[in-house]
Amino acid sequence: MYNVEQLYKKVNRVYDRGDIFISYIKATSIFPLKIPLSNIKESQIQKSYQDIIQEIKKLENSGLPLEYREFAYKSLGKQRLPVKVVFPNLEVYLQAIQKEDEYKRFCSAYDLIIDKYPTLKTFFAKKPFIVLAYEDVWNELLEVMDFLQYNPKPNIYIRELSIENVDTKFIEKYKKILDTLLSYINEDESLASLANYAFEKKYHFLYPEPAVRFRLLDESLAMHNLSDISLTKSEFSSLQISAEKVFIVENKITTLSFPKVKNAIVIFGQGYGVGVLKNIPWLANKEILYWGDIDLDGYAILSRLRGYYPQTRSFLMDYESFKMYRYLGVTLTQKQSPKILHHLSENEKKVYDLLCADFQANSFRIEQEKIPFDGLISVLKNFNQTKGC
Image 1 (cartoon, one colour):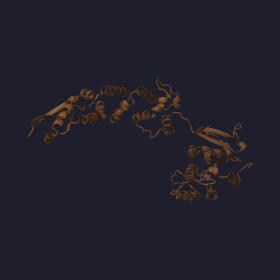
Image 2: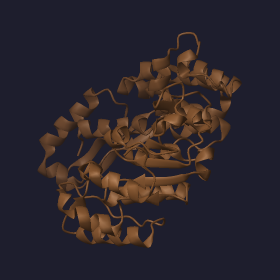
Image 3: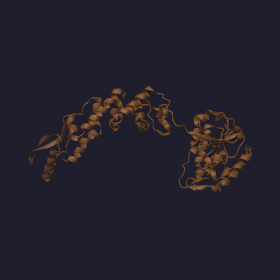
Image 4: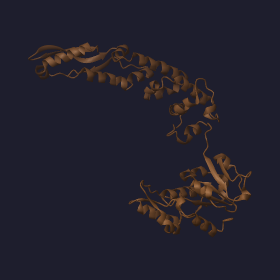
């Protein structure tokens, strides 16, 4: 019947869909806007006459512009009943839903944006509420957009930007919408994620590089009497280290305590952080030896590293080591997920397959730091690689 609350939901739904904003953008009109009311049958009037009369009074007192029609009923005679809400124009509609001020703010903000970037018209026709979502910061957003359009490769840190009324934190907060708008303007693919400094990389800002920590295991390789060194990736890439062998280990303490080895260095791999070592030119010609945990992740990291450097060999991760130190393994409460690994040797794959077979019951790990230090010394001696061990 005539439920005023439900009717107002229908009236507001037009606004919530953004229809009037899209009409403004496209210079069209949805008015007169007609919203039909429920048809009332004669039997309903006979059954609930007083209730219907009360509902009609509420409807008439709501202020909504009603259209009436005269009905001829057999038992009731002629009855004049409301059949539609009809908004003749935008002004009447906005007044009814009390959105005059918000609509004006939309128009003002939209005009400001389109005056500078008319190509965004199509974008806002699909997503008009973005205009209101950022209405308080459009001046600042446009300033940043202007800068990036006229300076496509700033090659500075965001912190170094000097844009009036815009600070570093502002850009950090609004990276997503900035990228969405600029990508549309430039017909680029927008970023799926802002992780790993994706915004800075796309718009050619400098960003904090990941660090590589390593130790020189031979005193003859020492740099300015330094042996434990951390460098950015670009700095590490530019090194000229004469070491023949490069050990990469998963654990930091293992890195710090790794024995001295002639003509060698050891790198803290940081688990999956080993990805930082991708595309280091001088590593391509080194003998690389990797040691990680004996678990699903350890072999996944090894496989990834060997994908970067096919000459990579593992140690203390073979089947013999697995059998020898299995008593040190622990069952994990959080299961690891098996993966298809393409860069394992037959020996390594044998251990990995055993770990995958156990996965259905539990997840198993032999942590690197649980392996007795003497075991490491023994392996290095067998390689005939140690110095002073």
